Length: 415
Image 1 (cartoon, rainbow, N blue to C red):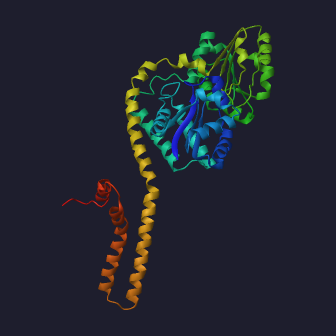
Image 2: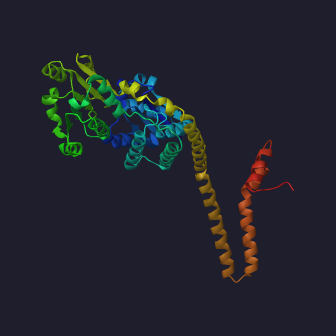
Image 3: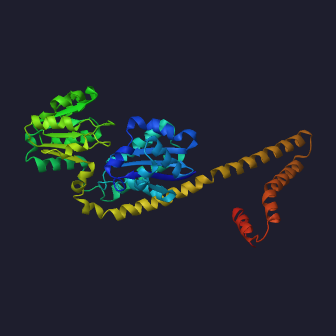
């Protein structure tokens, strides 16, 4: 089976496509189990973030996996094919190393992707779809990322998505300290955003989450208030800034709800950032007057500031990646020989045991031990050399290639 990567990312597909193919953590195990059923793949892991959905697989053909992806997400093949990329063998390994190192991210050098890859590996292990090859691929990816970050400036001057959100808000409001902020969700991205906004000492921070205990745990860290997600509708008009990032498959803030909030605010501006994939805020909300709605794709220009200083480190990072790709492929090629080596050793062991039993029987009959050992060694040598000798004698046409192979295997010299 071949090793390959199949997926879409922020360069190949718009947000409207990416959100249709996104997987949330709680459904990944089920998806991997379904993918592995029927022998579609030998190994598989799914990496799904706001910027990419990628399947790392060992399977007969990528077409089987792309068809599964379309069927699982109830999308026709022609709808997603223009956005899909497939990296086989060497390219798949190189891509994994680049992703882990932040070289393929929307924010060049961002470190968050490394944790997301580790989570993808953990879930694949729990689903029983992480075999030796993918385990080795991910472990090598993490090692490459560590080398890249410790020996290059790829991580210097990064403007994160969270920091970019604050910068955008500052374009709308002169002082964040005078604004009320609502965070919807309590995951890692919301936590990062809350940290950046809290540093600006806003008038109020409120965390809305389905699980009130988790929301309260995050709120307590920032002196904020926690509310239930169901309360957002009646309180939305209170907030000047809304940042949402949940695992919901359906929008949380619809057009009608936001319209009522804007009316209640008497058209004071409302800044909204939707970091979720699929989106938490209906796209039509962005068409409302006095609402400034941004998605992850809208943050690109802001996060690219400081890019020049990191771009200079790309060449050094790529050198590290390429060297480690060669090392991994050498391991992979060696692993492909394991079944043959095992069969060879098993055959040799069977021959050894058979001849040993024959020699012990002769010794039990009282025959001379020296004669038995001499006979044992001759019989063993003849049986080990029978197959290669027969192949040389029976080969047709040019025997030079087979002779060269035998000479190399047995370290023979012409003299």
